[in-house]
Length: 183
Image (cartoon, rainbow, N blue to C red; front, side):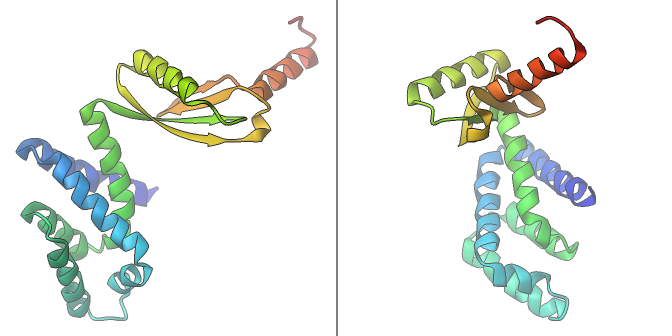
């Protein structure tokens, strides 16, 4: 829970800076790049967080990485702050929160759609359009499959869950029958 709060606080701070100077999209790309680099280079990430190495040596390595990435002054200062506060291990989570906050600012929402079978491109477009009308936002779909649903789809947009799966309908019917109610 603490990591969640830390990541959200730093992401919000960076977003506020981006809103003020109009560089939110640039910060989004730069933060994504740093997060992907550290996720892909596990040894580098471990080295930067390892207290067995001196702080000065780790800071030199981190500064070299920042210079090689050619980050903006604001992002370089943000990364230096993260290092100073010992928050480098949270960059992935900070990035996740920042991406979501930047999407909200742009009026974009991500919806996950889980279906029992593969959906056609036409069906996905209809779902996207319908969700866009419901939310008033541009929708980006993340699609996956779960044969355990038997049929139908389950959609998540933030806290909203739209469950149209046959599995859930059968479970609901079973509960109704257990209570002795008529369907």
